[in-house]
Image 1 (cartoon, one colour):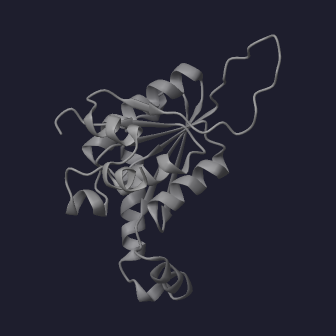
Image 2: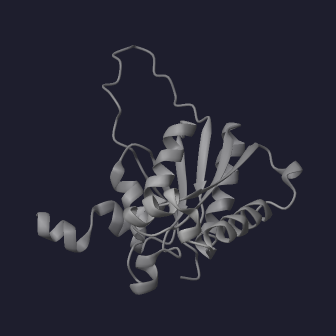
Length: 193
């Protein structure tokens, strides 16, 4: 069972890989549901879109905007500038000059992030933008915790390292965020993939 799951992935991973429609992967329950007679429907206050600026992320943006508008929720657009390993992250935090292109990549990411929605006045939800640097999986999850995200929306098969080396593999970032299990994740594939 363990080896097969490692090799083949979970049922959710297989669905995301094979499905042409969006796949919502539910989060683990945080605590035991209260035993009440009345059912209270969930309320979505914050949607987080994790983007790597790929075509899949562009399509995910459409879904994130729809969900946020439908629930009158806040939409946070987040992009993580990858800085490499944790050891390298520590070095660049202590000595920013050790990665001279870092500041340029962060500025470029801010510009791209702001152009994703050219006219925010036509959007029917509150918008936030955030650029982080470090490991994308860790930064997305940290942002979701800080923003108290009710849903994370991501493109499947983005531009991460695993999809460049294995173009038919499910991205390591999406896989890691989903496997964390604290937040529901809406995975979106681009139809042209």
